[in-house]
Length: 148
Image (cartoon, rainbow, N blue to C red; front, side, top):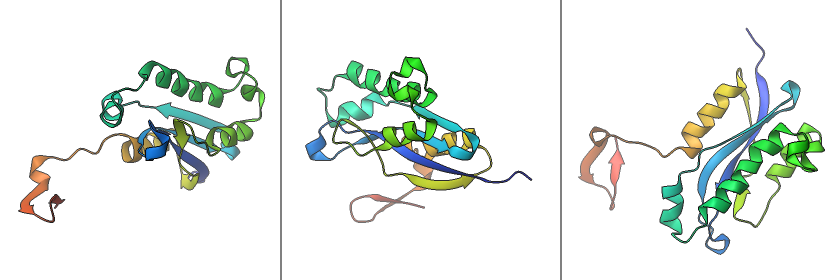
């Protein structure tokens, strides 16, 4: 059996109007120092963002988000931040900001397979939850339907 790996992660958010504190989760950053692993995956749901703010410049948001995996990979294409050691790049990416692109606080977990944990985090924290009609009751409970 493989040893479980300890990893840190943060959820990437787009906050269209910072003063309103509304946001949409759009990706994850996962770091595992012992495996020299740092990766970000972005899944931008433009319709969810536009539902919060129809005036958004999606091209600019896409460009900003595209830079995150490049910084994770490091190297010259990531500019001066890309020259930092991997762990420092992670801390730079997850540092608190008052800008349109933010991250959650850092969380820690343990897993056997880092790419699988990225997929799990995307499923649970980024991708919209899907329910089927049969999974909902028909009785009202305080203005919303309660899952069975």
